[in-house]
Image 1 (cartoon, one colour):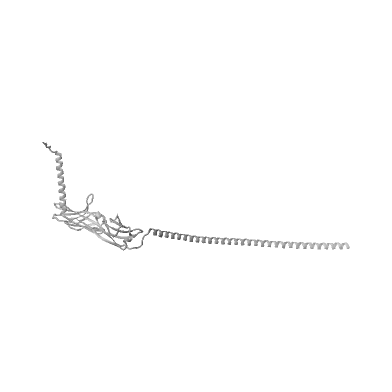
Image 2 (image 1 turned 60 degrees about the horizontal axis):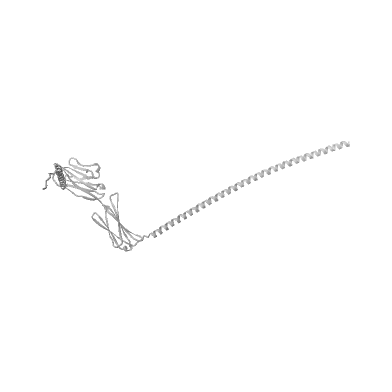
Length: 350
């Protein structure tokens, strides 16, 4: 015989609270869905850096006092702009010049972004404050995109062929290939840019380059549900060869070195000729100075000799005059002696 054990009152109360909470949550969700069902909205996708509009329409007949637009954020909604009959349009300072209400209605409201930026992408809430029924809200989202910019090219290497397809867009594009042949490998990489776009680059590595010559390669770019084909026919042009490249680089370096050497030799010869000319000019100048100095010295010696010669002649003349005077005096003395002798002899005769 099994004995029944009475249930725990605390557990019963907890179970009841749990059921009531569940019912409250379901009721709240139903109320929200009912409110949102009363507001008709459409999500919009617009080109980046162009104008974009979001609309809400209330399908009930409640009296609307004020319409408020909010930007939904992770923490809490941010008020953007309001409209009422009493106060008109009021735009928050942060959004002035960027957004405004362009359809002034209490049951139908439209906001317009004049020039969309990345910050404008997201979801927005339109709130209709009604008399007696409170707030009735709707949600609409804005998505911004950038059309793909695609480039397709190929490069021949010594032992393989690379075909590159690159697409830049927002959101990120998807690249597929349509190409015939075997021994083909594919590598893809993505790069995000600060402007919100993403570049996707896909490279086909073909081991047998000649097998693709004359054939058409198609790069298929998928973006926002639309596929566009970009075609390229491979033609045999310049074959990239590493040995050839090294030879060309070596030749260029050699020519540059030869040019530098010739320039250096020419510059050196010019310096040598200039130095030789300077030395020759210096030697000539020195020689002229020496000759001039020598001539001056010789001229000085000649002048001294002439002065000495003139002095000797003057001394000779003086000596001759002295000798003549002496001779004259001697003659006079002789004459006087003769006169005295004669006088003496006369006296003796007497």
